[in-house]
Length: 157
Image (cartoon, rainbow, N blue to C red; front, side):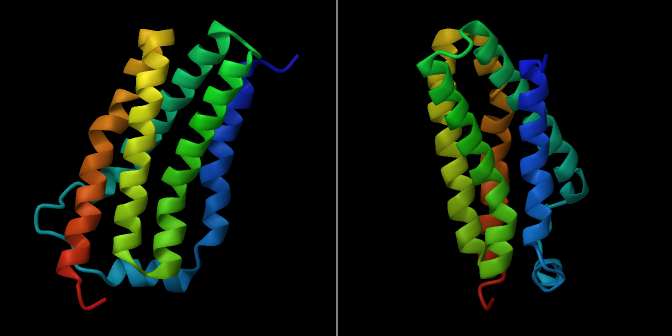
């Protein structure tokens, strides 16, 4: 029998992995050429930070699923978790394809709002599920601000 954590973990892994096929080398090259803020010294850590955030999000989803498996409310929450992940992952391919840091800033802000909605909902069901979403809440504004600052620095692009 397939366990719920296996399905949640697989979806959490497959969505970011499959998004790599949407990124062309030309688009990635555009992003590499952009100027960064002088204070952006942690860029190499960003993949590790997001990996941790996605693990926490998957764990939160697992807790919620196990609380009341298969109910309509739980399925709706799983859809919200999925939407949050899709919006978060869309940041890179959509921003690269449009070559617009403003689009990236909007996507980042949208992810933050969705995460707040999710936290406020799951907090009432299980406090640990809400706590596991806090890393997203703390990091997302940093990433969004960084993208906004990059759009300001690279305004000619």
